[in-house]
Length: 295
Image 1 (tube, rainbow, N blue to C red):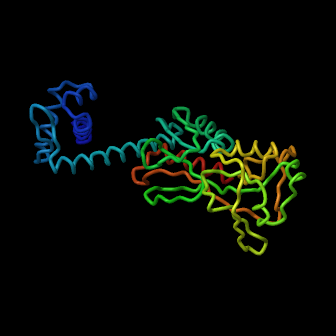
Image 2 (cartoon, one colour; image 1 turned 60 degrees about the horizontal axis):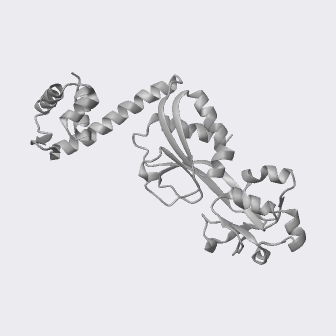
Image 3 (tube, rainbow, N blue to C red; image 1 turned 120 degrees about the horizontal axis):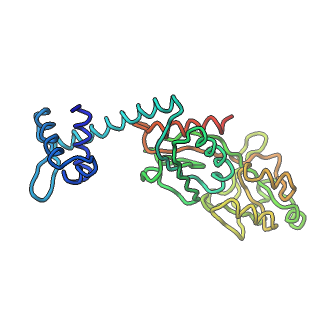
């Protein structure tokens, strides 16, 4: 029996908590798993587990060996997956979390193409505008828009998103069209709640000078589509990413204001907990999205 097989049997015992449960996972007899565990300890010359009638417990050496066994298993799996990816045969499950509107308008077609290219991948996509902890392990990749604050995470930039202030023609006809960012303070502004009111809206004039304005408005929401529909209904001015506004600008439902000023630019990132032992399927998905979105 190879050392890798011995490691996998040891890991199974640790993770299931008993030799009996490990035997079920490995589809072996209890006697076979117990014998192989004893042979492994004999080969290493060290006790990995303490045994009594009620439970198994890792020794200090066992803790050390288990951690490194898991790392070796992950690295072997990563190498195998990389070889499969080179042949277009990547397989396994992936879980991705992304903002609702961005996922629908920007990522959906590319995720479909990714699955067409890798038909043995099973993808679960969760669209949610609430904050998701990328370090929790619930997802392989989390898509974030804006400033990243968690230094524990690896972040790969997917693209830049350009914000644009817009309003319905009917609103501007009734309330006037602001000519400077400062005038926005006198208007109804529809606010995205995932950005603090205190931060306000930031604009830059042609010379590069920053203009920050504190806004107010009747409606706040954590979803851009709701804010866009409110703006179309004439409820106020909204600051949204350009990809959300293309159709509404083309059909005249909304018009751009403050054309001489540029709003802030935000970046979109693919975020995951660790670069070490990154599964090949995760790496390939992230690289695929970077290539697709930066064309």
